[in-house]
Length: 220
Length: 218
Image (cartoon, rainbow over all chains, first blue to last red; front, side, top):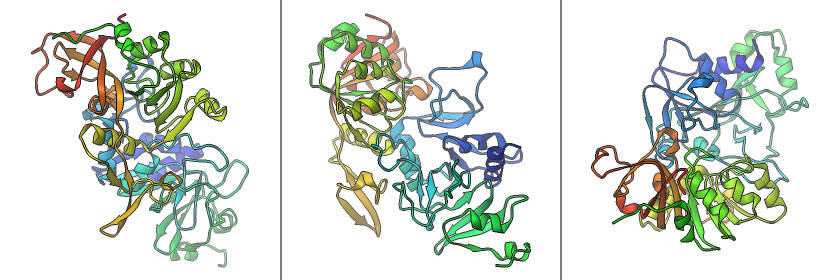
């Protein structure tokens, strides 16, 4: 399986029946393909849709029906449309259960940067700050390192942070971390990945769950 | 009391230097016939309030290419590289507001509110020059309302009184913008007699709408 789909599939396992879910652009969008069949979730799109459905066939594309990435979508039975102010009231008001977002970097406190690059003008933020502030649970899906092999999980972010709010769960191609008051906790290794590799490729300090310590030959 | 006018008549009401809200999420729900009519007019030095500035050479992107936009207020301009270039060349001033803050600020503008405190953007670069306040132990920043001289909006259908309904995700910013400008011009795909839209379905009541133009009409 493509590694990005692996991450998306792992993220989809976090969803529960009845969740209202907002998916960001990139790997998060792929989560829609992996939602377990035994649960029903409702996809929220910040441009004013609750109940986003699959991508339409070319002949069924409706120019007035797009997701927040401006890509054509469909809607499922029981869906609704609303204006942008109502949509963000849902987000800020804590009515969206889970947001799954992409990132540029994550710091040791679990705060993320996903909207601006240092040295470049800030010309777009979209709904990133709103989603991070208001969603009940925030899951980040990302490749563990950049294309250059640098850790995306860093002590201190070199990019401007999106919010002071820390995310709840970080899912990468190598591992899963949960974020607690005292920082990052490694709770899962991806199949075939060693603790050593995760330690080498993670700049930020993290604690290691007992289950991993007991299940690995690496001395910690 | 006729509200129906042509796109040409509509843009004649707009002077250079006006502050104009334009509906749409990208090109979806953008009043493209009104924007094209603006592009054919002589107005310049416009201040545009819109989530984006169209695409290169499409929608509001036409006005950017013509250098008619002096300042833009919105949430996401990086999707149009010509906007980025105009900003770098100092031809265009840009103010970035988080999307939820922007839509609520327009709603507040239309609802007669003096602003609101939002937790969104606290501690980030966007909140650097904003008043911060702690309410019930949580940090908020103050956001002023957003209003304009004109709102150019897009709806699916109007009745002759100016009651509006929208189409799917083309609704987006349009209903708030209808409330927050001195003069509101609605571009619609279809006009029906009053009474032909159920009162239960009307999203924007007619008191907000000053003029109606037909999409693709002249």
